[in-house]
Length: 340
Image (cartoon, rainbow, N blue to C red; front, side):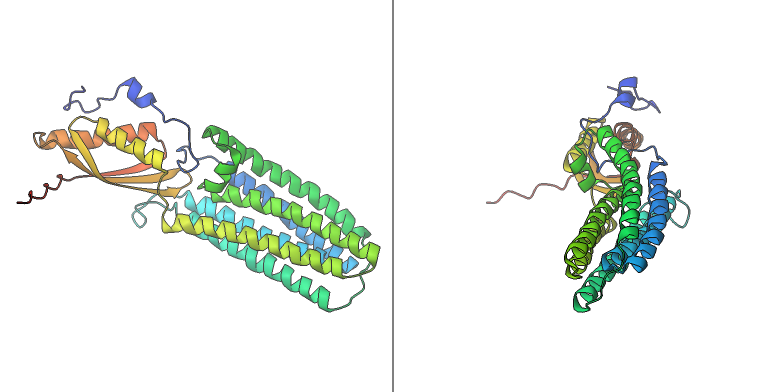
């Protein structure tokens, strides 16, 4: 047993201890610039693509191409908001924000999902309905095909960057890629992957609409393609909005991480029981732990203070994402009196 009066009784084994297979809900402590780089690459690609699609849509008269232009423009606005989310969320704690700015990134990311819905999905659905209800002859689709091919390459490069980061993060946590993407608290990377994937699907739909209209000389194909692009964007906006809303409301660390937190606290001398445990994800690489802990009645005040400090050190060593630990010494409530 460690000496309770030793101010720093950690052993090398304590400091090196790590948890079993990782989880996307247990973010890593070291902050990395990959999220910002991924978002910048996506924003630059989307801005160039939006301009090209708009020109091609005007020349070809394709509503699907105009929907794709609105889609790319909405994605550009989204990436700018996600970049603001990454930068604002990484600001350190200060006197006005004692718990840091981590949740602010989810506010900006939520606004980005709204931009995807309003700027992309609503316009695409409207343009598709307009194309189906107005018999307008399409123009020359050659320019549109060229732009779609270039856009596919640019979107593919942007998606490759996002996927590379997401897969690296998933391997770091020993998680399969699908589960990581569903549960990761780094919603900026999740947004880039989902939006770029939706963009590639939208490009294929737009190409199909152009080809169908060219073969049948009917605007129905183009209008249906525009509607389908709108449906894809509605789904992406809903998934991203829901993920960010859950994190804004407050999502705890996963069950097995909470079990590990209890285990670490109970492993400290002088602790008897963890009466209440609260965990909160505050950002992709930041979380909080608060607990009511019962200590031995025979322990002195100094021993209780040391135990609280020791528990905080052990938790941060095992889970680097835990930045704040608050332990409240609380006696176990007495058992109710036995009946007659």
